[in-house]
Image (cartoon, one colour):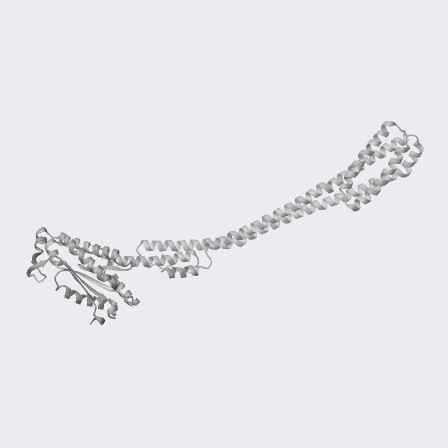
Length: 450
């Protein structure tokens, strides 16, 4: 049975657990990939957005502020050429200083090439503006000439450069925003596609697994109902090589075993609950087929019918149960683990053991039986050791207190071909023992059974 179950286990290819694990891993894998891709895309877009805000948008804003400062400086310079005054001069100087800080912050947001380009314009404009401020207010005409010929054109060129830069930056910002939107849409589509792909791939496996479990549970439910109704020949067709297939095969084996147990129970003696003739014969035949040496001990109670006639069938049944329990206990305690005890019927019993144990078991049983059996007789019969009764032919005669005869046949002493042959040989020995006084056992030691 173990080998059969082991072979079933070896035949399991893909278990239900494996299928559930594959389905889960498939779905989890695609989910993790989609989440990872979404997080990566989000990180990239966050980085781009931060760079866009901190660099491009900030540079455009600084360019706008510089344009405003330069325009204001141009207005103040123009005012000073018309009517020099200290308030306008101080304000121009203050605007010039603040403009230098704005220029520095603006240049930090530019690439090296653009920094070099604007450095040239800022340097020219700054030098001309410094020269203009130095000429005021003492050399107003010279300052006015410098403003008209050099400073104003330089201011206008710088404002134009800043305007072109702002327009370029705005186009770059617009392109970057469009790219962010496109990237967001693409990331969403890819993430959704990966999730749906995981669902699509795992869905058929999950559905087939659910259907398989449903079919298997339905078959097992039907088998359980059949067994509950007493139909132990369960026939469950399954080709599944998983846990449910193994469980189905175990149900089939269980049905066969239950049928065997039912047969044993039906064959067992109702008094002793020991196996009956069918099981005894099967066990002896099995030992003969295996060629295992064993001893077959046939036990018969002498004068049991006379006891039954005198004391009644209830007392006779008590002796039948007592003897069965006594044999079973002695063999269990003194024999081998695989020894067997059976009740042929009436006052006939057998036990099967190894040849080296049979003689001691027989003697042990005789000793206990002879000590126990007088308790079932009346005080008068125990005192006399006998009583008068009719034999099976209706003839009155004296019967002794019950004794026992044990006929023993060892399988190695002859080539017995069947349980019937052994039983026949035991019957011959028993007839000889019954003619002897008291309880006796005899082992057939004749080689070849002759």
